[in-house]
Image 1 (cartoon, rainbow, N blue to C red):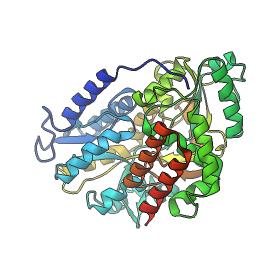
Image 2 (cartoon, one colour):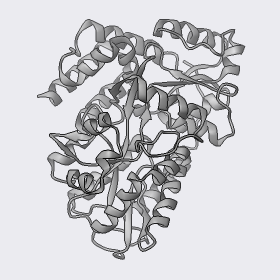
Image 3 (cartoon, rainbow, N blue to C red):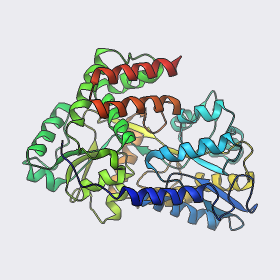
Length: 427
């Protein structure tokens, strides 16, 4: 393993604390029971970087469409929403919900539904014609027991490798290679290691779960991977053992300071030429674009080896909390999120693609055009790390097992932990 310079953790922690104060009310008067009736507190984890740029673009459309409402930013910093979800859980338990909150569409909503914390939106979909705005396959993934509980703002692809061609060339590799299998890719990673650069950058626990899901998808194939969530694939089986061995090999080729980093830091290592590869969802595209990097010249993007022809899906979506402080404001926000105008502005900035079929995408970037084609033509599976495949409680247990492996490197223990998590959450 190779180390990278430590990041300014204290600065980030201070920023997160300030954001948390704002999210819990601060001077905005945005708490669930207080504040102006025109206030619409939107709770997200889009607090910085390209994610905040996407939110800002969406807010601009909301303010244009709804001049009588005041947007209140309830963002809590933390990659993949780990910190935000903890704050949100506390607020929901104390009956202090925001007007709306961000959640990944799919199984992540299960816990909120079972605890009676979010409203069903199927009637709203029917009344507003949203059933005609979104593709049928997406609508199916939004449903639980026939009811829809959120409005998707986008579609993201999780199984993407981001690469620095200059680093690859210096290591004697073809900068345009995409690699058919994990074995082929691992051989290339080892050449980068020998050349003195970080082969594969990762960050804190959730990014390691993200990497793990793509390895499982590559080695098990889409049917075997999907079977992990419905019980038809055995977590303790030999196929999973082989995948975990590959995951362990990849982790041995990553940066040692990963626990002090979040995803933008790991992506930046590739942008700066300190690392060759990074596996991250296509929100990373906005990070490259915001620094005037050109796809095909300054960076490369391709499906994780072994997953070509598969789209590892997730979608950010917004909900209507039960007993929310401003139902009319919530509905107005959901209208903007569903609209073609909102989705065009948001996704162009964030690197994702619109879920709305009427959104215009001709002027989207080169990477996004490849994602649009893949979404339309490839086999779709649901992301683990980003809430589409498993409930919050299941993902929490998986993350604990992955974090433990990050400390002890014990593959057998990792498989035992993943098997126990599946048995607990599938029962």
